[in-house]
Image 1 (cartoon, helix red, strand yellow):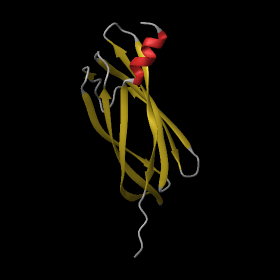
Image 2: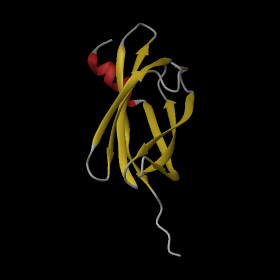
Image 3: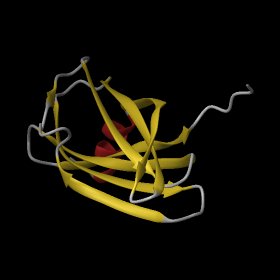
Image 4: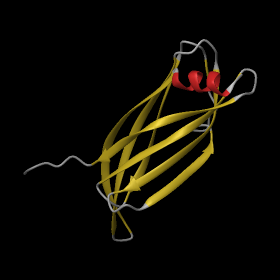
Length: 131
């Protein structure tokens, strides 16, 4: 496959995210804000792809960044058929009540070509309420 064909394929794989505040806990006298997120990957291409690895850039409300990478997601390297979707949920914690996550997946085609699929920037935020 040519680079432009791989680019077109990557653009046909859509990633959407829904995040939610879970709870606040105290760890070593410091607050931790726990968030969950659900990712849906829609493969709108004409070929199956395998999710090989992930990369996250997590930024808290004070601008502190943490990078996380590893094989697959939630212990799996799913094969996503053409026209199919894959969904999973995971979570993270921050030292601030808001922050962001963004990153990418490295996927592999049936003929072992690698493609990079962007995970769009999304917010993690504790809802504010008035008592």
